[in-house]
Length: 168
Image (tube, rainbow, N blue to C red; front, side, top):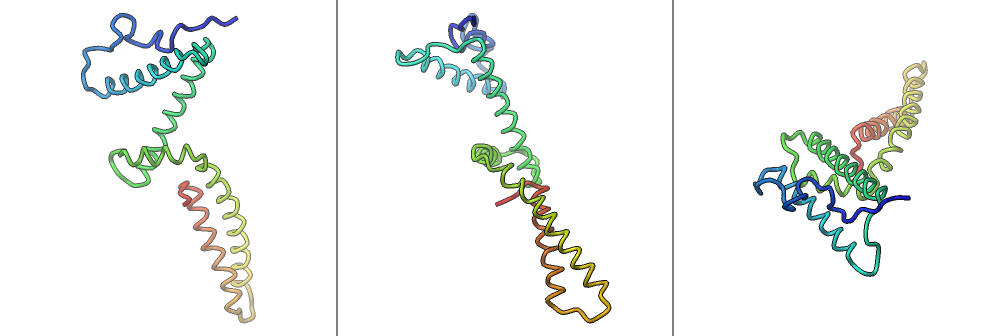
């Protein structure tokens, strides 16, 4: 049987004696610590309400932290990818906001997953038509050229969007 945790902040670094970390400086680490501690404090408030659960289980709490860590990792990597696409030196708040919207919408992978295969099929058809047009010994109509060139242009757009993950 699982043992229960007395509060979500139990075992939080630096909360053993004073409930605060370090000297209260304003470094990035201190800011991140206090922001995350605020989240844990909100969990504690919710768990103290009489109309619901009172604590996380020993399996539930680590799993919550695992998902939280995975989300933060993915959010940071997505923000870096967006900033890299914009060819900038610093990941801005706007990049993080855009990454959060992409992740929360759940459409990032779904939107780009179809562009590669469809672009490949269209490109293959365009290349086959282009080969027929170029190897034809008789005069070729404008329609035949259009049926070769338009699919190649469309395929190049779809494939480039698939590779960059940039789908509107």
